[in-house]
Length: 378
Image (cartoon, rainbow, N blue to C red; front, side, top):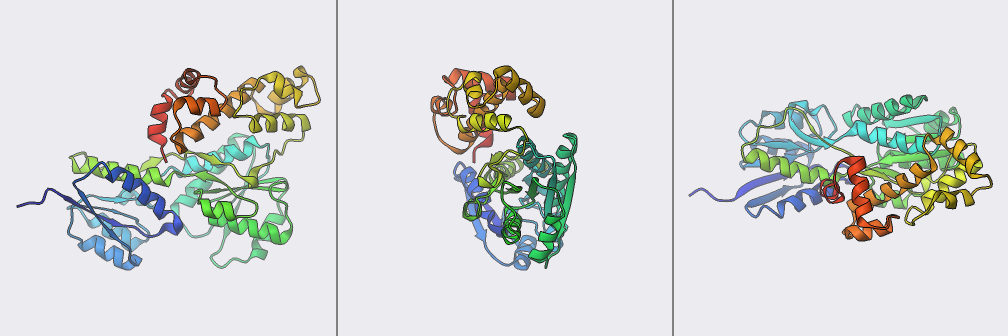
């Protein structure tokens, strides 16, 4: 008699510390599937590739990490195979991946909003698809703002002196985006050796939000939350739909980044106008409170009219718009990273009522806060 259980194989490479987040997402989905029997295989890459070829089960979730692995996954036509690694060109296999262009754009937006006019992107010269796409997204957004990006491609055996020399040749203040948090860590080490002040001279943002790495860095590292847990959750959800008869997608499913987790490495504003900087810092530091334009003006040394004119010219937004942008950004972070009630989220992000928060979400995103939380839950 055929078993009522579905046997799902998990064949995941460690992915430099991010694999646990993907597993958390898979686990969260599997809790609603009591008929799934999970088998986790923690082996060397070569052994995992061989296992993908021969494993007798109902489906596989795996990480395509090299050509051998990709060939094995692409050749399994008898059962669904879902890839969750963005290391290669995954068009040959069914994949759920990060939206790497969007990650690069979000990093650029973060640095642009800090007033930077000079930018660099740092990656390893390893041919990985995700780093290429993150760099392309970063460059596209910077160029849209009227600026240029210097690309720094590190060799596998690069030295700190090599990186220091490249950074030293660039103008400062400089906004730097590193393709991964661990690459950002290399940049921080080079800055420390060369006595480049972070964030005053070089502001740095990584990608992945590897919390331990980011918090142990000195200074602590700002990073794009790429939402690896959601990637795992959506991979399991896609597998469930395929097992129920849905056609396999021919293009990768892309998971949008959640937000930039701000830490000390970008805690700076590079604008030349001290009063505009004071206004921005006041708004940011009080985004959890109900504040008005007059409160922001009081934190500067100039009149409301002068501040509004200079702020709009430099930032491209009004003071009123910037206040609500700060409230909204904080609300999104709280919704995606906590179990707070809607009213608590509203109160902690400067909104007086939950209904005001609901109205702004519908206006800006076309969804309710509850719908946003469901689709962005980490």
